[in-house]
Image (cartoon, rainbow, N blue to C red; front, top):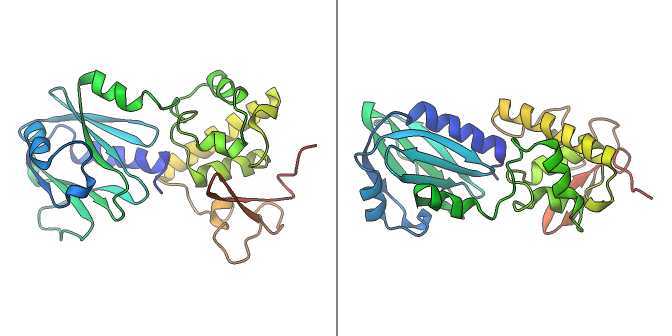
Length: 263
């Protein structure tokens, strides 16, 4: 599933492919990825308009035009953005093609179609889409991060992956951050000490910075992510057999030695 580092990578794809270019034609190959707008309305809003840039909030990407229209992407579990040339073969999961000046194509590719494209009008339209989201995990300051956790009654991992608390973290990032911070995912968020919250924030920033640089949550040997899908996964730090469980319906992996139960 695309998480914050993936969507930041898609923002960079957009910037290099579409920023400053005019949409010559919108081709919707699958109506199933449009949310709250028809193919005709999408074409009317975008064709002849120039993209001025894009910004990200959590897992959402907002592509701005020189008018008030903002094209909004949410990538669900399998979505991505691809910059293509006109002669590049169109793949089965290329759902929407934006044909741009300079013979560029920006393609929204998505296998499962759990989310998709929306259109927001003006700043108010964008604000309505993000009003239920917490602060962006990459931009949030330490004090706001700590304040968001203090009021949570549930499990720590559940709090980290709740987009209304913090926007952008998903399953892989949450497990990685908690492993680095040596905290169990089923610890209660409100039981953290001030020192715990500072350590958790530091490890979140380090994990995000490295992941954004990689354009994804990397499967490195030194990372929990590099071992979690092995048949008999072991901790890359201490060699202990990793534990698996489910929290709020999410597959969760942690090290019982490095992330001990708090008493």
